[in-house]
Image (tube, rainbow, N blue to C red; front, side, top):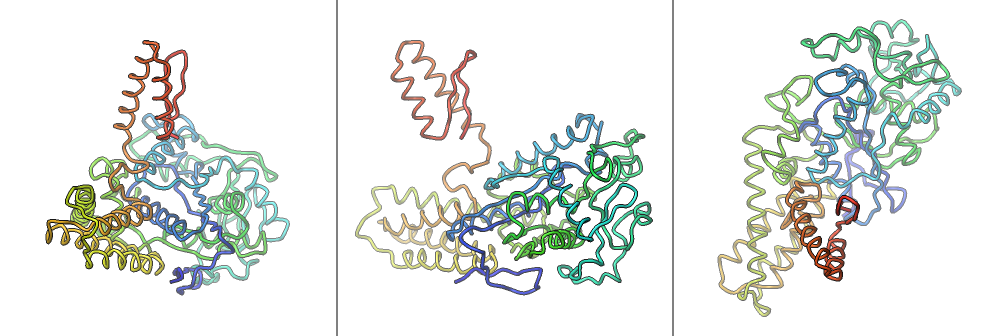
Length: 494
């Protein structure tokens, strides 16, 4: 079955047909102005599943996911607590925490994680192209995109230009030709008034313009929000990409504006498939930092662990909204426990003396085969993780029935069941069957490596150089690079 996806651009289900064996995947990343919460992580996880499934189907996936590290929300937190005294420091603080959360959730690493501040030259070049082609204009040191010059404006969100309200504050409106025009470059720094909109009212106000600025052909200023993703996507992927993933709340104005500025600059389709992830709801509202109704990823990892969180997200298709509550996370815990117990029972039985070569459990063998077929059909049905997860749960039931109904086990069937859990549940769903997830809590692993290094150091002090070298080689084979220095041996996971 060919993969089909629901393309927001057409509003229809379409067969996925990339240009070749390489898939260019761009994910709208986070503005690092606060701690990441489970609403953010829902987008990360579904993008991760898309990445994993495309690779499983044989594609080479070039996954780019940006960090927005220059924004008035970031500038508004300057001087707050221990976040730092300038915008780069605040951004670095939250970016560090976000990366830690991503690793904790066992997400596959993107090919690159571009930052806005690294791409100011590319942003300026793109804006200059739009000005030269008559799609943008300068006004009082700022530059705006003229939406009336792009005939297809509104094609993603199905909006009419004549009915759109201004995408700006009062000061910007006076500088623009049309209400729907949007900023590509903003003159000057973040004003105290802009900062106040996002600053904790209990803190001392920011009284002077703040945040980073850069020189440009139009004067000193900062990039607009929308232009950033176009510049970073085209820098690291191409003028036309296969899949653009983002939250449903970004369809307008962010993604609509990305299309307009990108296609106006290049004359080519910007993204062929737009996949939008539904929002995470809690207590009847969207989970949001601004509403204060969020559960941070860090706290959730500490309380539930990566496998339960991932299992929770896998209960709902990416395009649908999902509800977080004590009940829904408890259900996820039960599903993960059921999968893990069945997997471990299969491993124990397969490796026991009661596992036999000539025992044939027809039902289990047929279930394994059907699980693989039905799982693939579900995932190719617009990444239907809910139905795919149901197949794994069905396999868990089949394993339990086999072990309960007989004293002698079908070795081949159990081995194939184990491999199915590991291939589909592990490689595709990112669940950690039998081992810690790639990005999970590595404190135990670090302690064990340090223990081996202590033994190695004792061997070196005793003159047993061959034994010490063998320990180093064994660690290298496990993906641990050891470096000897004046202060002793250090290590890092490769």
